[in-house]
Every structure is written in structure tokens, then in C-alpha cells.
Image (cartoon, rainbow, N blue to C red; front, top):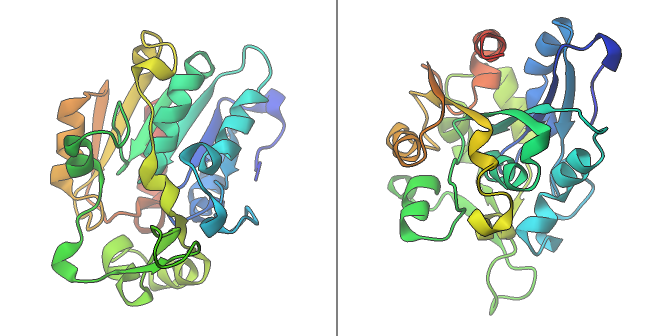
Length: 262
């Protein structure tokens, strides 16, 4: 979904990348704030998201999952640079794009996001980047589209856990909207693989990275965020005292922080 106005009047081109189970819709409060400041905004639906018309259980690889973002960046006019904004697991897609298109990315902003330089490849990656919700019990519904003797093809947060994990500080109306629009995410998302050999290893470190932490996050815990920041230090860290979904719980504050980073 491209929600931009006249590109000739835009200050920056933001590309907003949602997390697992979400979609372009989750940016509905931030998008008009950015547009109102004259920026162009593209909200991507990754494969399996509500706006993609793809069955999440049919997505077999991380490359297939993140292809809509790759296609958007591939189609940019020569010389145009974007600001990538990734939320939660959308950080994996942002980092993947940084490896492939470092020359087209002016800045990468990670919001409570998985920020790993090498993807899910080591035990430390999993410890830092994969949400640990075990204290809540069985919170996931798994689908086995290839049969019970095969690994799951998709996963989803059970409805009774969605608000307490994703948006406990957000307006009830926004949580209700999310409960309608959240979809299962492809299990292939957990198979993200990228590394120094997957692009220009020197150029990716030249892309300015900013991390926005969320102190009341029940999904990507603050200690996980801090571990990822220590392991791959960004150029700047900005703190928010919110749940996992600041685009719902504090959209005005999130907007103010983002524009100050320009």
C-alpha cells in the first residue's frame, strides 16, 4: 500500500515494515502524521499479511515472505533513498534489505525490533531475538499445512493473549481492530538467513541505524532489546515507556521521535 502524496513535495520517503502477524494496517495512526508533515509513506504488506492475499501457510521461505519489500526497493528510481522503519520481527526484513540495498537506504529505524546482523543462525541469535513467552504457557496456535508429521507452516498468538502481550497500554479500540486484522505468520519467518556474505559487507555498516526501545514490552523484552543493542550497536538509541505497539499506544510521541531523527 503506497500512501504517499506528490513525491515532488515530499521531504523523505518512509517505508514502514510490520512485524509478525501484522500488516500495513498497523501503521494507520502513524501514517497520517508523517503524511501531514509532507513525507511520502509506503506501508508494505509482507507475504501472508492481511493485505497480501497470500495464505501465510503457503509461504515456504524467508525470501518469499519478504519479497514485497525487496520488490518495492528494487523499483525505486535511480538515486532515491528511503528511510526503513521496522517493527518487531519486521527488523529481520529491514536487515535483509540493508544487505541487498544498502545504497538505497538512508536510515534504518528499529522499533522494538529484532536487530541481528546475521539472522537466526546461532543460539545467541535465538536468545536475543526470539520472544520467550514460556511463562504464559501455550500462547500459540500452530497450523500444519503439510501434515502433522511435518514442521508447522504458520503460527498465531491465541486471541486471549493478544492484548496482554502486544498492546496492553493501547486503546481498547486499537486492540479490537488488531484482533480482527491479525493473521497467522508463516513459520518460514523463523528461518531468516542473511549474513556478511549476502551483500556488501562494508556498505551495510554505513547505513545509519537507530533503535527505539519499549520499556513495557511483553513481546520483545527490554533485556532482549538491550542485548541486541550491545551486540550490534546502532548509531543512536531512543527510549519509549510503552508496550510493544507504540504506533497504537503513543503514536504522537513515536512520530515526534522519528522526525527528530531525520
